[in-house]
Length: 316
Image (cartoon, rainbow, N blue to C red; front, side, top):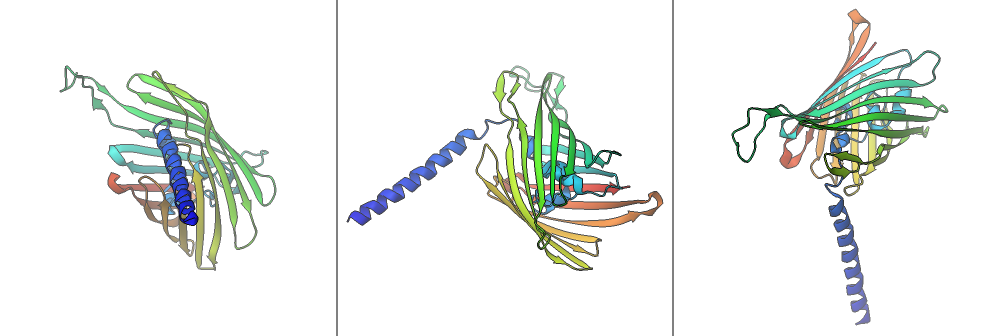
């Protein structure tokens, strides 16, 4: 009898703890501004299910892990543009240029992104058909990244971002920082990556104050297969947003002769994102002594529909 009562008490405590945790998460949802800062960058990374903090070996690293740009080719400048279709007919654009400064160890990047809507007619309770005026809304960021290798295995990087918010004539701005580290374990091409995004203060928009969502990420990647013709990378990532439950991402990329790439992944415990897949090709642009990567990714957003991403990366 005592064991049975103890079992029921233990079960009750577990349910209570779980309910308290769920209630705490529920109270945090909707209390943070700048949600667009969580939108992942790059068709390659998103094709791998967003498990990229420990891969971070292309210019999209400025979002996932700024330390990664220090590993890019020192004799090359890279320019990349990203476009995504977002739910509710929103438009998402992002661009990055990564370069090296003579005499300065490491790499530097400049980048910008925006999430915007088309002009919409202004309506009021007295003029529901429109006042003849229009308005729009959106977010944008402009960032500077610096990263360098401290040893042959350990790399660090930092972003500084100017974040701007706008709704009709109301505008506000704030500054955020991102930190990242990347460590080569040395076995099976394994790497460990860690990043903290959106470190910043509160932002006040109109008469409402809200915090920027700082997100912690940690993950690992490793080479499952590495031969002359075939390459296979696996990656796993854990993240902790401040306004929701913990999340995980798992993904893989298969490459054939450094020409054709196939990718897949899954977003675990996300509100909307689920299965992800993508593909890419690498090809020369000989007349410009340039090479290019063209990538595509698809993400299933459940009831919100599908998100399609396209990225073009030029190396010259």
